[in-house]
Length: 467
Image (cartoon, rainbow, N blue to C red; front, side, top):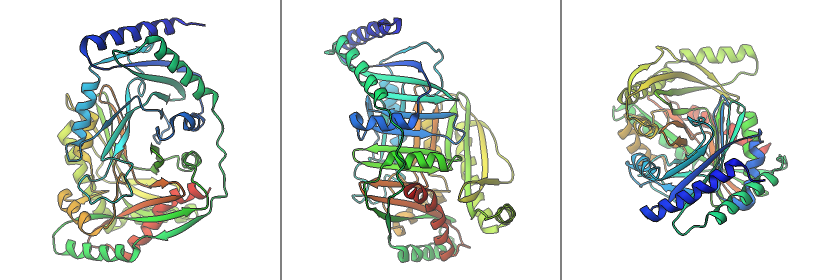
């Protein structure tokens, strides 16, 4: 049965193709329709057969917004320098000059319509290895199909790029066939629990030596704080099923951002507790997350540990450096900011952190990607002062961070959206996975204690992998 929306889409396809012939520019047509609530994980799994290597998953801690991207209608690769955020913003704005949106919802529901999903590396100037060969310094994807779950209601956005030689009947047929296959192939995750993992520490002694060197540099006044990360490599008995890991992360880490980005046969996946920045209309939200302690085995012990963290001078100093920098970055892009004087606790399944929320009212013509550029990397992932800390990381860390610690998230056509900091994460390559964790090093840091802190931070991914 041909619906009124189908007829309208056909007319929009003809309009788009005609516009292509006039301008010699490709046109993006986005169709948004409300759908019955779909199991997002089943849809992600269904995309594997036809769109292997082209899937993205993203959800935020309140679970009010969940996005699943299937296929690549268009890809924007960032420049390999410090201009990469503005480069993506400019490419996106230029691309959107030629758009046609078909939706019964105006203004568009938040998180629907033309949306880019993806992320960026931590540092474009860091020495590279072959580990992250499938991931560029920044890659943002306009999905062919995107499921948006917003406060329990679901929408499907279909994005089609049309050119002057396209046939509207063929485009309609392709869209209908792919959509039918996606919805037909949905299946529940198997959640296998028989995956055996062999752990291999990577340069652990060298990492401890690096912590010692950095604390000396801090004592000499060369830098205030440096975040050093390390890698834990694992080999599995079978190929790692990213769909199963993703489902478990979502179940086990309800207070975290859950994300997965496929690039060919490699996957970057994680559960991050840390927001970098969110922008919606004129409101901008960020957070300061630094200072860590374990969860207790009982409610009493948990409270005692949390109270100890709130009074620990080393962790409070580390946290204050993050607050100072985030405040400065937010002031650059906002007319007004609100920030509490003292941190609170953010309790996760395995650890608890010192946490300070930040709210700002955005200046005119400031986009989400502008704010990402001002805030990344925060002292929670880089250090303080920023440039000196990055120099120290490049010198002593001996790790290709790739996308670990970088911004991962989404941005819509209006420059709104949200990015998290890609921590508590891993890079999956067949039967191998590299996990990453880091610690903020200040003058009072003890190398062995910092090493144990990284062990705690590996727990979310290890739990999801083992089942």
